[in-house]
Length: 312
Image: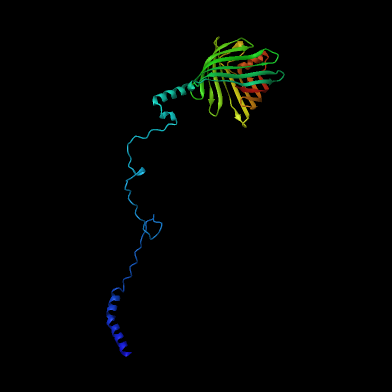
């Protein structure tokens, strides 16, 4: 036992200077920290390196290609016949179709007002309608309106025959002749006007009338269909008449001669046939009102109306 211990002690003593020398060299130097490995932010698994993408042997494709100057592909057409017929023939046929609806003709008769009017002591009647025939661009229009009292001569009536030319998809320029009938002298007028759909579907018309006697008159009117339901429609209506000078024969004064406001509620049993009820207020203005008072006539009138609007 003693011999074993002595040999162990001798080994320990022999290694002591080397250990002392090793620790002395590193006594004041702190241990260096282990290096921190940084991973790419696109790597969802820390500590695992993402493999590099394999090279595409075919080269770049699609949006990876560099910009070029090659012509664009032809624009596709929604006309299947373009694949089989020459372009010049298709263009000629398309132009003819757009010019006159392919040679088709259209026609319609519309009676917007056909009514009985209940007034204060004097009941009467009234109508206002128009008809047209023609293509998409050129049409013939016939317009008529008038009114009267039961048991008396017709107070006023007029008929217009007009050539109409479409100047855009919504408005037509019209020119022709107007003939007046009824109480007072019959008059003939040259007519020029504009009719169409204003924004928000307002039906509008404006016209100038020059009589064979040199009298110049004007008219501005319009109406609008406000749908309450699919069959119930409320139609407000306005009409203004003007004169450039006094017309003694028709007792019309210069300026704004009269105005009319109406409100009618109709129910469409069918689109082509709709009974209605409503109210109409009219008043003579300016010098026309003065002339009416001198003649003992009323300058203001209110009437309740019941009638039918129809077209075919």
